[in-house]
Length: 120
Image 1 (cartoon, rainbow, N blue to C red):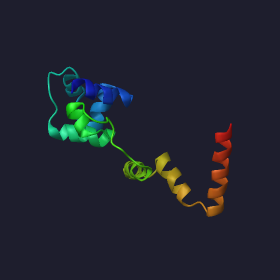
Image 2 (cartoon, one colour):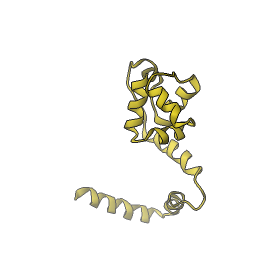
Image 3 (cartoon, rainbow, N blue to C red):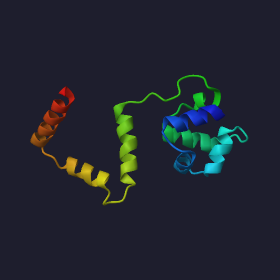
Image 4 (cartoon, helix red, strand yellow):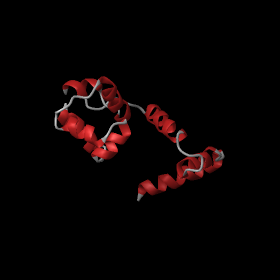
């Protein structure tokens, strides 16, 4: 399991400290998991799977796909959940709020702009 935890962390582009903060443990705890001197409890495994969309069977045994199948609705739902936890004046929250107030014509203009940028 030690190698699989390290793979998840490195795929996420995180340091041990960043990874630890994301799942609510210390950096030293992650280091012990990655060196196999400690095995995570179920709550930590569940947290890793939830935060990084990892297949629990793969994490425990190495069998199956590393990541869970997902679709755009699930990805958006998770992202909006994170967005709702941000401060009211965060750029992301303000930007999405602005987008939510666009008219249909403004959405068409935005769609046109993004289509043009894909052609370049």
